[in-house]
Image 1 (tube, rainbow, N blue to C red):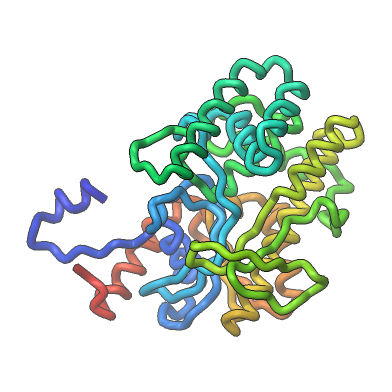
Image 2 (cartoon, helix red, strand yellow):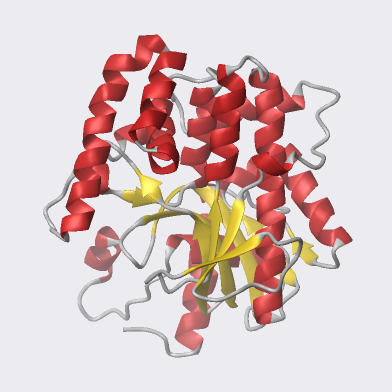
Length: 337
């Protein structure tokens, strides 16, 4: 963004297009859909800067090519060490388990993978420093205080718990290796998962229309409505891995199945809140063919009109298209600086 402003010069009109909005618009454009008709967007990836100053990555949006609002997201967790957490899946696992089970979650992860104990002790210190920083309201940067709703970091966490990937040597490695366990298994159809493995779906400050008692009420300052919380899944997975009841292949199926359930339930709730039934699936997570097929089939069975990428990729390779189309619509509606 800084380079763009420098190249354009001080007299140029400025159009800000946020990362996940651009993903949604890229999918709209790839399908030749009208830019002025409001749609839902489920955008899942590793990293993208959000307007609130946190790192987004699992977002339920509603909007047009000219603008959007955030309806919901994955429950945020810390990125201990900042960008280093994206390269070290055990950091993401420690962050998610610390959020879910407190310090005991990190201890249990270290017992499960004793070769990682020294790293995990350092990560625990960062996480607890981050908690103190946020609770104290101070503004000085602490690496453990960076918050993210990233789907990629959740893949990292599950991959580390299952012992699949210890280090990402290329972008999305943990997600690729975890998903490959499903793709290689002929019995890997993603069916219903046990109740204890399902994400919690929470509405901030109001009740959802009840569908099986899955929505819970919480009061938060966050302006978005919908929270998808993986804590029950992570607690159940850790317990079953510790007991030897779940291996890496079974764990990967449980994770993808639980993820599909959460995505579909989140979009069902968003549809009830908005009346919208057309949805765009975008972001690097939707390069996973097993996940795309399962989510699309479930949504279409529920009556959704589902748009997926056709000619441009769902990852950041398709981002420039979304940025250009969004900028054109914003200029048309005079949403420029």
